[in-house]
Length: 126
Image (cartoon, rainbow, N blue to C red; front, top):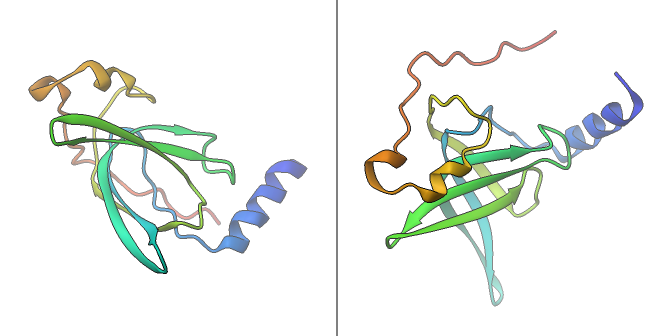
């Protein structure tokens, strides 16, 4: 492992975040901390992950797209943000692309993603 990857792995381990295994096409629920005045609450943002950037590294991010009141809304989350409370995978999608930007121009039935029923979690590498 090269030095940069080793440093990034150490920094990610320091943060102690539990990042689930997800990819583009998966429907995920992101619990995001929202501060209103003096109070902080967790707001869930549920949608389809349309892209992941910079892998699982410390600089990684992912884009989640959802339809809100008939309008498409996208949000980019840094993977190791301190404002992310939790990430849960709602359902696995079966897609053939790494970036699903074509969903931006789709509406209705053509924007659906088939569910992946054959998903096997990655085994823990020793």
